[in-house]
Image (cartoon, rainbow, N blue to C red; front, side, top):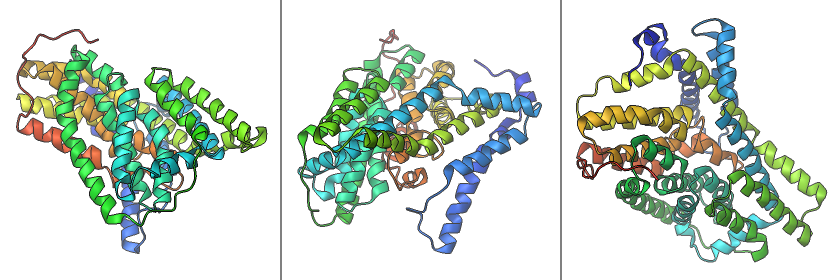
Length: 447
């Protein structure tokens, strides 16, 4: 699969990505200014939606064709069906979190968990629990929705670092996604390489387990260095905790995430009405507050998708694919190329879409060098999700930050512990040919 040379000649090449250069440039400038002015980076609110709007406007002003052609490309990108589905899920997530908090569910669950998790193990405990949930339900967004408010409550109660606690949620959500049999990234990666899910799992686990152990050690050390005396633990009510247990169980059972969240909202409302902590007015106020809290995330996601439509219109995606795949000369180079291509595409068009685009290319790149297709599927899955820890304008960092008041996506990038661990472990495995091997079995049809 090769990029049409005529298309490349008419494209802007790498300059098609200039809106993202503007976006990153403003953020870096703000960080440098904070350092020079002696302002703290953590907790220093950053108007990421406004900066994204600036980048979006710039994308419409300069590029190929007429302005209205770029406007049309922006509109088509922003109206992507996947993006619209994510908007609806974000609205439901915000409403569920707000209603459950209003009826006392988060406070009860936080106090319950503090009975068993000592303060110096809270970060590591959050990583472990989120990983198990994500492994079970196969969706990083759903795992973050369930765990981010709980992690925030634990951090506040134990007086710990909030961004660090939420970064453990992000890491656990990505980790479970790497191993889950029901994850959309797993399904996309295995089908693109025509291998079985269990075979890809066997490759992934060799990389994920060392990265998980390293992340657990880091979170434990950080927890010990910042641990305070045991906080005063309040009371809890098992019934008020039931909506969270329901969310996890229903998702594990395979229920659609939108249905899970809608029924979860109703479940929390019924409990709130029964205990007198909610009435119809406060319930509607909580739904409104939760949805409003998600607006910044939603606008940012829509703007980024629109910018990507313009980038594609200007030939940026074709240029990126051509640059990353045209000079491969060895098996090692093929694997590095697939890793970098998938990482970059994941940062631009989210993980599953990145695998769908990169999968056929990865197969063409790796097959001539006898790279095991199970290995290729593993690389696609790992690097498509690893970018979640390093991208502050879209993806899981934005999703996690939107679920917790007083935290910016940029803060989570500073604590990308598990994503850094899995990237390092996987790159080392490529460099030293660890767990790679040769094709030992015939390719099987993905289940």
